[in-house]
Image (cartoon, rainbow, N blue to C red; front, side):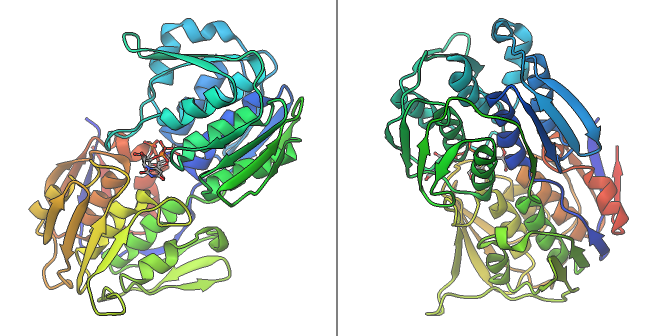
Length: 434
Ligand SMILES: CC(=O)N[C@H]1[C@@H](OP(=O)(O)OP(=O)(O)OC[C@H]2O[C@@H](n3ccc(=O)[nH]c3=O)[C@H](O)[C@@H]2O)O[C@H](CO)[C@@H](O)[C@@H]1O
Ligand SMILES: C=C(OP(=O)(O)O)C(=O)O
């Protein structure tokens, strides 16, 4: 059995260091395939998804050396393209979302790639059209075999072109950028995603010899180069973990300092938590959250109920909406949570309702939360974590609730949060692995 047992209702106290960013790690690790020279990556989180991708790179022939707890060296000098046809590749490649991003670099460097339909959270339809339409524009041909679930892509020489993405896909943009850096001539990508993950990737590629301009905007221009060289790269702290810890502190009346957050990279995230009434201050590059008995949700200027909705960067990330939702259950006031991007990410509210929260699921994309203002505590129950962020939201709910909760399917949480039970215990949480 893989579960957490939590006895909630205790305020936590202390300092916590955010792990390196999961979604950045998946892009940066894929980029090591673009060169035969050595790449050193530090601040790598020790989490399931990242470890699976590192293992997959090793299976493909990348020389992988762990030089310290969070630092690895990679050298992709001898890639074994036959590995594409193995059952192991099908099983491993299909087990995480991030594996899709090995396609762009492989295509750029070797002219072909294959990938099984990738995994990731079951949070609604997760199409890959943007990736493959982009590769096609660069001159690649792809075949999707619905029976085997494999995408096969071929391109002897990618050619730069103008690409207007059909949507600002995060992994799609990363994949196309990694293909375009070695394409012949100039590629322009409009409607590009520009999350800090992508900015970090582009900066790393430029250090490797790529010529990318427009970093941080939705218009990227890439002058193709013949080859790329080695570099060193440090991952940013995980902004989704940072947001999760802000929510945790507010909900459990805890006094927590989140260390070294790289505040300037957090975009609209801090202000969005502030709109729920959560107070915190920046001390150096740490976020200090005092213990708060009560927090009150803001309204819009005209007095109408606040909506918190997701949007491509610099909008609010969809990966923090579940956390906003759970935190709102104990706020004073009401908020509409609008998850525009994914249609199956809000169903976990049923469990919060069972715990005593007042939520109306209006439709699969929208939930209205009527905050309890801590007049009643949530009560502990047994529940199963449906996806990574709902899982952490349930964990936060359980830590604030009276009595005992059990959360099953914690693999989902551990996909993205390193040693979460140990780190929460260090803050005083009563959490036990079953
Ligand atoms: C490994 C990784 O990095 N995963 C992240 C990545 O997934 P991923 O790259 O798979 O997500 P995409 O950005 O491609 O799209 C996410 C969803 O939003 C929709 N969409 C996207 C852009 C847009 O302008 N309009 C729109 O509706 C897509 O149809 C899809 O349903 O980005 C998502 C969106 O931030 C995050 O939730 C995931 O955690
Ligand atoms: C949805 C997420 O991850 P993935 O894209 O890997 O499923 C996430 O990190 O919130």
